Length: 255
Image 1 (cartoon, rainbow, N blue to C red):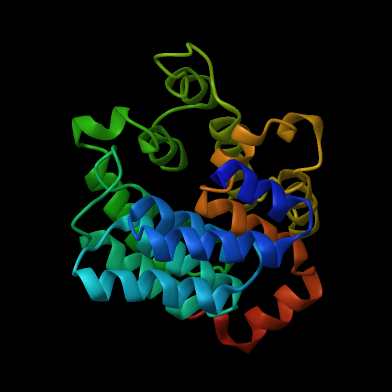
Image 2 (image 1 turned 30 degrees about the vertical axis):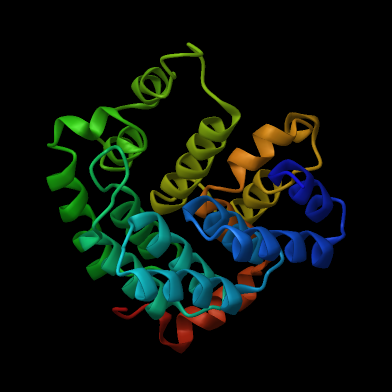
């Protein structure tokens, strides 16, 4: 059964059947493609501990590290409300053997997101310093480089849109449009342009895959590869009162 069929089962509510088929594909042909498919399946099904173990075991077994894997490990930990562990995983991603096309933007920009969603000035400065160094690399023209330039205030929204246009399609894919919306909302939250309640409402809109925009299965398969999708889904379910309680209990400190 194809990956598209597996995800159709997951989205249709037959999660266990979809996961079983993903597991069978991974067991039969263990490679980065089936690894990521099963790991994303775990995240979709909110089996966060299984997702964490899945990616960590792979990196330990084969001695291969990738910022994409650390990103998803951190996402699983974030969704388990372990902010410290998530931040540590994203820090490990800074030194991964394999990084994104932009030269390693994914891990530090996730650290920046963490510092905004669970206010931490020390982590925010650290993430910004790393991003400022990495955006000097000419590779920053590749995705997700423009996002880093945007959150650092180096480019405005119009330039961000221009740099989000994909060369082959000459347009902005639904996956990138989603990315743009997510980071605009996080930046607005950081700058005080969105309240926590409004931010949560925007996250609910972003993770609603029942809309016509996501009727195309290929678009959904691309969307669920965004680590930020699972962060957004988690934040959409975290009420303001709970967030306030978490912050008061010490999550404002350094991870």
